Image (tube, helix red, strand yellow):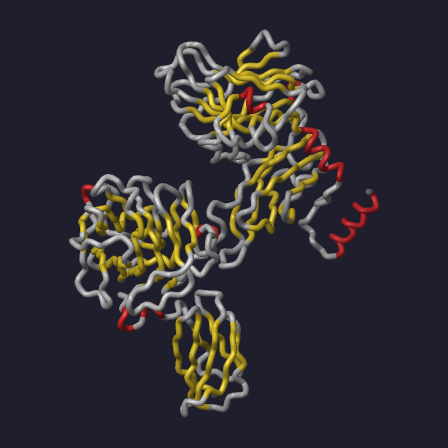
Length: 601
């Protein structure tokens, strides 16, 4: 082992990676990190709501993380294991099952853990944390400890101030050093509304952090290293104080350690580079009497680019994939996902390519960002079909399903609405989320028919407009004036609402630009972001677009003869063999064709 460490250190010195220090995944380092976590429980993943007694007998992952000598128990009927409302929002949330405590009367119901052995550690160094959510903030869970299973002492913690999941940290010194530690979580016996007040618990951790440890790492932050259509990486930054007091080893699950070295620098920032977007990380810091495990959640939404205008989305992705897993889209909220569907919607004047997307009922939203626009005009155009209205059982129940957002992703109330109107569907437009304020179009459409919609906003006149099935939009079918003018628009969102108001929707061929689209000009079929340069050219011609799709390139002389044919993917074309003169370049991508005049010098 010593020879291996020497070799690694010599290698790092040789390539002059001066900021990479002690990144040696030795068995010793791994063992120390694991030994300092005395007890952890992520509650497994229940297949359905079940009692604690039945859950104990299950098999992983549908059972507790720990077995004998750990023993779990709970009040029959009132304490259960749930897969609903999974833990989220705090670092280290497992998101699987959780303990659910309900109240039926004035007797407190409980969840109990027996058999935790903390005898190898000092009370002063033992710490505890757990995920916690309550349905009301006026009543809080009771946490207690015992070393004999009979006499119980309260453990104090900071109560939740909201009804969201939070990570609760118990102050050091309250968890005793014992071979027979028991913990008990109890629903309080007096609550304002005893039959509806509920608590959930997840991710219980007891760990040892020596009281003599002076290194203090702060909360990690993340930042994308790049935002491209490829898989990018992000950088983790962990501030710290109390360095220069021991030789510390920093070990991430993935990535390269850099930044300030806590072994020699008193205060600074540890950095971890090279973690792929969408991949969580876990950073272990050990040394002296210190041992920390710091979970890191990847940047929400990934490291995805802002799409340049004009922006064309053909949904040319694998059928069945989740739309927000693609690099042009980010996820908002939670629930079932918008999915890629096979085939296309058809409409006169539109040559569809790629695939389409579909959704129905409640679920997550998908947003695609584009270049922030603050003046002039901005338009989106798309094909849409409402294929099934059967779940919208209450007539005239509206929902909005597509909208512009500002460049931060916050809603800006430029919303396209729809509703079931006596078995047909109808579009509307609004500047807020109140359904009573929607201005409805007079047009009614049958299920399964395809509509061509254009949504536009004019910054100069502060006018929001919706055009329906107009090949060359003239007068809008619906227009409204926002109460407050939009300062910028920089995103387009697809939205799911309640199950009883969102029918089955198929959406296709999204195009966003600063000019009013026209099917007669073939705007809908243009290659988005196509650039052919330099022009004039000499030896090399670059052909790029917003898409990374393969492009068929054909070059013709003034007599119409084809003089060059090749395929590229945002790569240069060798034109050194062409004589000086004027040519036409024909580029075909995803079924769309555009021509450009080219001069060869």
